[in-house]
Length: 380
Ligand SMILES: *Cc1c(COP(=O)(O)O)cnc(C)c1O
Image 1 (cartoon, helix red, strand yellow):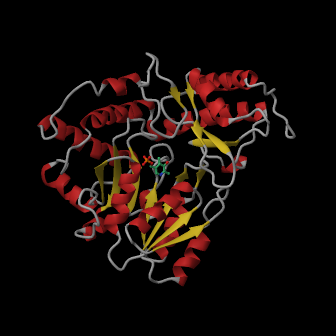
Image 2 (cartoon, rainbow, N blue to C red):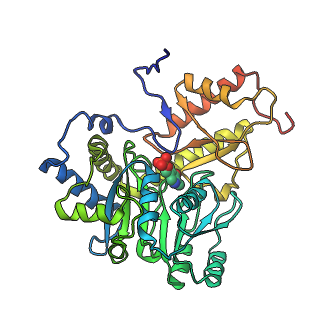
Image 3 (cartoon, helix red, strand yellow):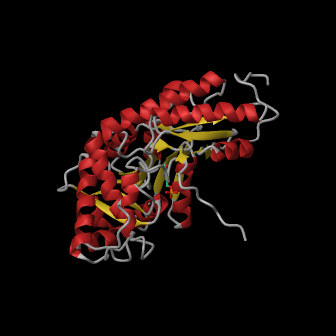
């Protein structure tokens, strides 16, 4: 039986989560805590309060709810708990994560309309407004902030303004953007925003969090289509005795509390965004310099992750490329674009310019090893 062997040195993860975390975030997990112990309840309380601070929202109108599981569990908890029987969801879709929101609604048998754009184009709020005017049965609108499929950033505030004008409840999947890309909750009219522990806040996987407008949240009692993923019940439990209803990911939460401290120490959202933008710029310049082509137009390329076309070269095979980079300690990410063969390079996690340069050097080396000469040529 084969066994996965881990070397003493972690590989650098150029992925959208799980991602590279600091040594101190990992060390914060070397501790067993009781899930109903006072010390741990203080960790929960502190994390909820810090999340509101990161979001720039007041705890009188918003609250932070933590939910076990990966980001998708938080999305499913939200969609399944906030849309009432007789409600209908409109999802603005320009990538795989938008399609996943549609899929969640379908599985839960919630009526849903997908309004689609090509993956290289941002969602257009004007078309969302037309759709809302045309279908009065739609009660909720959802959009993805950073479409991690491509790295494109959607204009959440514009879509939110339309939802507010048309009096619909607005949901945001800000999984891969929250903490790095600023968002004005009030201005965007956000009722529910979902993100998770292992994206821009640089914790380890284990839970998602939902920032919810209380006024909207209190209407959700009894709407959930699931016991464990009942957002309102989870909130009520946290408010009542400060506890999770079911076993929380204690270690992941200790790591996350530490990650939030490090986020503040780094300089908060603005500093994190600046580091990710620098990472992106270094990667972009290096990759284009080698002759790779980026999937998105330059001005649409966000700071979270970038998508590149496979080189058109007979010797290029993604799996071999990936494995050779992995052997050198660099993990890139396979593509998710529906219509084109691409791979992705993430710019988030505890990585900086020198790590990006290390990756670029490794890519050059690997191309040479595969017998592909640099710079790549269009007709190769
Ligand atoms: C990462 C991510 C998710 C959630 O993925 P999980 O694997 O369930 O954590 C959802 N939406 C977006 C935009 C993401 O980047």
